[in-house]
Image (cartoon, rainbow, N blue to C red; front, side, top):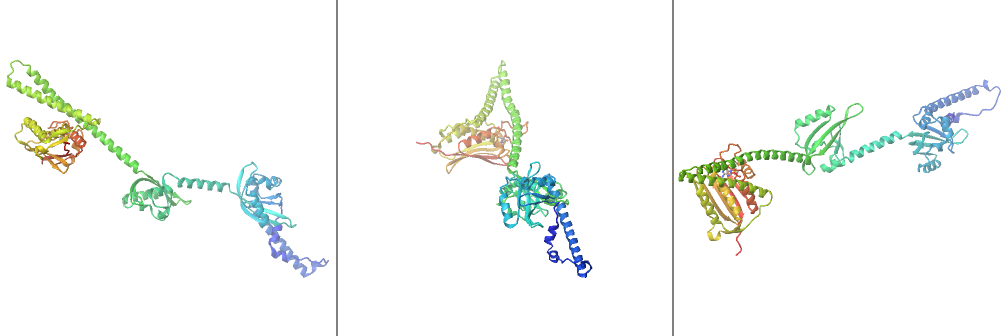
Length: 534
Ligand code: ADP
């Protein structure tokens, strides 16, 4: 084993100076000076031994691998840690030599040797090879010294970097995962002030890391979550559990958005909370999709309900006139029927047939509109003549003496010639007048129109039962009726207004109403005033 004495000798310069060479003399031991020198020498040897013991223990028990080599690379001593590191006995290491341990493919080697030759020492990182051929990274420091014979020697201290590199790699991988994660991540300290936010976080919230560092995440949630929600959240995470929730947060420019939030506490070695990890995901779109789905589901359910109600109504509306037609036709076959009664039966059959026709027409019109097949068919029409004709038809059938039915024309006959789809205009007016008369027991029903700017504004008003404001939009939807119950007091399919609305809009106008329950209704609609080319 290499002796550590020369280390002690070299370094303890004080001793080096004190050792003197004495002349040979037989009575030397009896002289006081000789005795003193003898004791000094013993002291020096004792100190050298102590020094050797210290160095020996450092060498043998150090947690670092130490190799002592000659400049040519011959190893003449290796400590236990070096043997463990390379997986070889000291003898094997000495036999193998430095060059067998160095990974000669490491491009940094020449530079390292050059530096040590120049300065007498070098520090750095190189790749080494174990007995089983495994390559591993080592941090090393190597220095040149002279042994007791003045020969150049090298001591090399090695520290295995395998676990450190692995840990660094893992750390790099984790920090890259966090940095490039598709979800936003913020890390706060134990006081809940932000220390780090990842790129996704910045891209969503539009604050930079510098802007949010040292701030509390609550700045993104000014007043949107209640105090009790925050208290529950703190109670959960401070008890070491993970908190999940949804929060409406605010971006830097003020835009509100929804996030799903997960907050997890991180613990240090003592089990104390050192950080909080806040992971969030923008769920604004998802939430909107869910809201839309819920709305669509409600609509589908509502539409289903309405269709059921519609089928009941329709079957009632079809059966009533059909029964009348079948019943009265049968009665007509009776012999000796009085002519007056016979006329009444025929009238009833005609009325019921008309009702049936109206229902079937409504259904067909809805189907045509639905299919996008409804086309405008414009022609020259005298508006006043159309209204007069409608008035005549309705007066003929209108038997209720309690309701006064009237009309007012907004243009003289010679200016009332317009270009329009008269079938659709008639249909709209018939629906509105029909409803007004149907829902008015007494008072007045009036049709009128005026020319306003470039539009004709029609008005059908009544003093009937009226419609509550919350139904004003609904009644224009298919099958919607202000009164939903199956034993409705008024007939109708619930299609008239939706057809009228579709036609008005197709003609380039709008339809709306003013009404409240018990106070009558006024329906308005506009169409463009088109004069025919002459
Ligand atoms: P219906 O065939 O049921 O009359 P409409 O689409 O024409 O179908 O009308 C839809 C609903 O609007 C009616 O069922 C009724 O509840 C309400 N309504 C329409 N016009 C009036 C009106 N003038 N007065 C009161 N309610 C009306």
